[in-house]
Image (cartoon, rainbow over all chains, first blue to last red; front, side, top):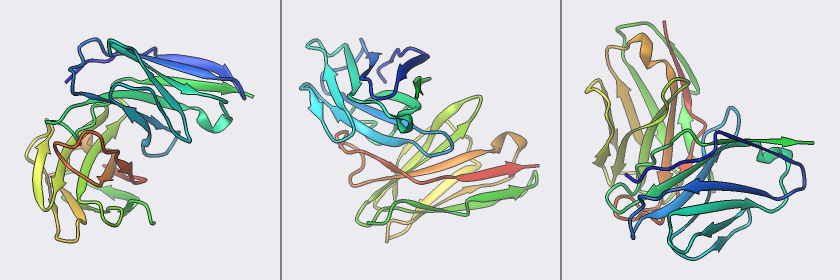
Length: 111
Length: 116
């Protein structure tokens, strides 16, 4: 499994953009990059995933570096509900449904 | 579409007992994965079932077992409970299983197990 490095914590203000970085320098060429988040007292929630190109959905955008060794999850306008722990998880064919959760980044949103 | 449901939501057991947890995946999803979450170890993968077959297994002792039924519902069993088994047990379902890393998982609310 590819190792990931994320900041332990980040803080932002409501209605401002948030950029959450993830380093995955050992990722293989066929690994998808998934992002999940876990809100307090809830199960993890899928956010977004991508392979090579940048991706957008209703929740966030995912910017993947050209060499794929890092990615950034972008929340365009943070709300209080976005306060959670965010996990960056590379997934390959062999472990496709085996999510390996690291420490993640605890995001705090200030009103 | 209804989400992933888990029963019971809370459970208290004593050491040495066994417990069975249930998970109903999203309709149409064939893959069910189980995770254990504790404050000390974080979220850890237990196993994954796809079409009634265990496809992937984490590093847990044989006391932890599971199965999946033909309707994709899954159960997880823990025998001879230990204090350290106290945790939140999460179930997740996905449309596809192994060899499909581009499919997302949907998690249930979890079962909070307390072993005394």
